[in-house]
Amino acid sequence: MRLGTAGFTAGQCLLQLEQHAITPDKGPILVTGATGGVGTVALMLLRKLGYQVIAVTGKQAEYAALISLGAAEVMDRQEFLADSEKQMLPVHCAGAVDTLGGKALSEWR
Image (cartoon, rainbow, N blue to C red):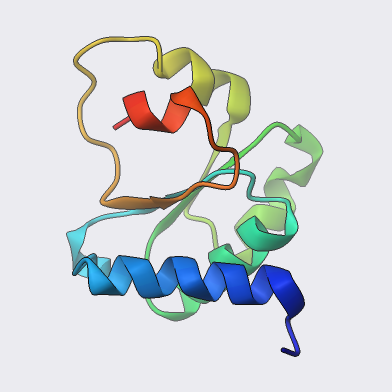
């Protein structure tokens, strides 16, 4: 429990991805709330395991920090939420670690 509750939760998310056969070769993984505890740990673990990570945050000042942790791309939360209202979006990622919850991820592909 060196990483605490956030580490345990992020680890459980990764376990679910693996149990659903979502491997690094399937495509990028979206991490919402990427500057929070679970999001940050998930980002680091995913990167360590070879996944390409798209980090979503509302904190523009943290973009460089997310890139330094291993994010391949950082997406602004407002852009992410705006996309969720569009119909017939192309698939962007193979899976997600969603710390935000709610409607947005269910419609975003």
